[in-house]
Length: 463
Image 1 (spheres, rainbow, N blue to C red):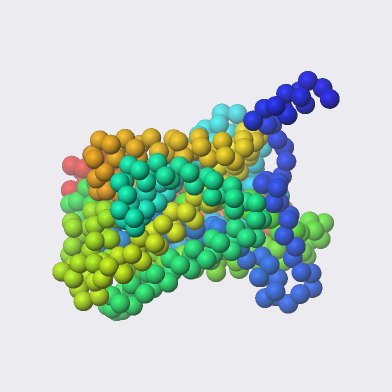
Image 2: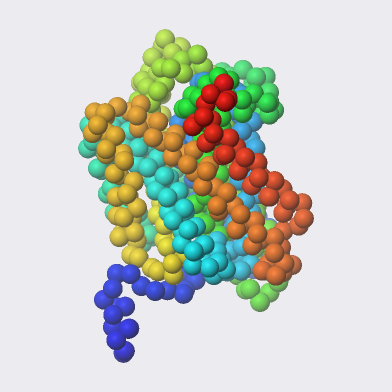
């Protein structure tokens, strides 16, 4: 054994050129020659882990606030964002299956050092922004359920790594099942709340039609403007880290890459799984906004935090006859499930981008400690400075979701470029209409982000 090998055995950080998430890559068998539905069931799972990112605590703040402030107006943003998500996740999953590379590996292998490190830093910041939303959501949920001080519950979220490391020992298929169970919990809670709230169905379906005033500042700026909430909803719905995650976990199914027919079938099954799960996420996000619109419209100023939403569900003056402590508890349980779900996928993504961009492997516990430590810093600072004021923490979540919207084009561009290149993808390259649709989405989102920045810093020109 030479000195370099001895050194690597005693080092926490290892250089690696292995497959993405090598411990689970190609670990799940797919029945050959089985009917379509059996093969689809074998492929179902990665879509659920991806869908988790589309219903994390960040979505709650932006969607419920959007409904409470602008009724059903921003439903069109959720619809368009979900369609964009389906397109991008299809590209990401296809990249993983066809090239056997995740997006971080594909980017790191095809860019110079400056480009690789720049994109890695942007992606890490996006992951920290995601983690901040998980910290705040989980901490507030624990505080609401058990009455513990917020400062204590913020610290408690740092120990979720123990839970995650325990889950990893059960195998990837078990993790997928746990995540799906938590997703269904969130779905049923908000479906129940929506049924009780009796929304105006005509106005609801009308909200899916885009209108010019959706992006109009309407004289409002900062956290209350429709433009800010629109960017927040986009950032909360189409999350950058999900593109890296899906391009990796789509490789967990065992495929014979020397058989073109099997690869084509895998891409088709991945697309079905992804679109089914993202449709479920779209329904959840719709329900979040509908609950905000049906129960809380006209009370937006009173719903300035998760705690205020929790209290509102038990207040007959706001939620009407359906108000009860039971509904408040359901809300807090769903919030806790959302935060834990996102923690699982966020940790996996952290490993993917570290290995892909830098070709370094860090033990999961250390990786989690670093990411969560960075995320805890601003949350703890605001909690201490404002004495546990949930309003300030909710504003922090909204700001992180807007940052995700700003960061998204930096992940979209390489993904669209790689999957549209015949040189890279061969016969699996995107068709022209998919390529053009992707670049149009990229351009529109970039314009919205520039507009948002100008609106925040030069509001006098937008009034």
